[in-house]
Length: 382
Image (cartoon, rainbow, N blue to C red; front, side, top):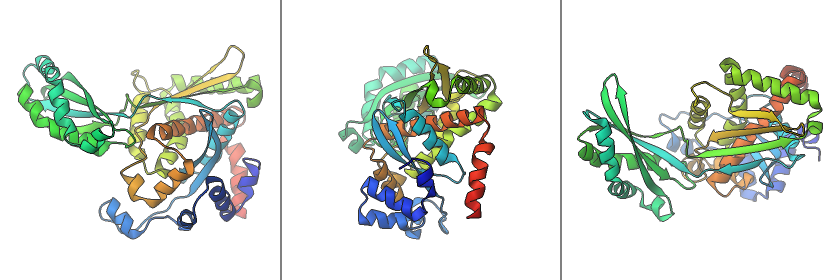
């Protein structure tokens, strides 16, 4: 089957049947997929406050995304036309050249405890580090299950801050959350350790919460696409010119990153992960140099081919939270056939890079409206 035209020409029911067969879904899973929204009012009421109903969004699927030699079906939940098609076409270009190669730095989250009313913050930082082992032991008492699975708090950092309301110390617990996103775990650990830290420093503890700038939890993905597959040297020139625009202009970089997250965020949404945390971390990471830059980077190889990469904070999980309470999230994770948070993170980042690849190619060869508006109008006429 052609990965674009034939699948798009199918009815929604035919596509669903194809995915069910390809992913090996059980009859129960197929029945869930047929339920519009896939979320009962009772389940919704257990997820958020003040529930009055549910709200459905389309589920699309990208076929043929190859990461580290494995081919994935990637579900995407979003409302914007063309997003799924862009990701799939970018994935197809990459697959023709061996696919994406990816690494993951580990499921490490940062938990922060703010200590105020400290006259000598730098001295207080030293005192905190002297009690590192005691702090870790206390923090890990907050989540013995995580510790039993090989995770938990494993390091302590402390830094002074000089602010307009006085000096303070920020203590950071580094926590391996394994296959969970881990927000609840790291928040609880911060609350558990706060009284001890107040005693050690003589300060008053205020905020005790995770950071969504997950710099120790990065998905790194690269791809090399031949000049011939892209359509020639002129196309490579166009992509690099478009990238240079984004790299040197934050107004363009913002839209470029929105496009990249068009690929990443719908996969996170489909799998029950926190898209607001993912977006916040991504855009903060894009500013880490002091200048807002694109999340992707593109360059020409010695042989004239296009090489690209993305590096994203990737605080996602496959257990706990919405992945457990929303039945559709569990089903879509099973369609992906990922077995760890690391694998999911790499697939999400690769989808973002695929999205950016095809978007830049399209912008460099005529524009998004010229490519997609006619097909959208044909769909609306049917």
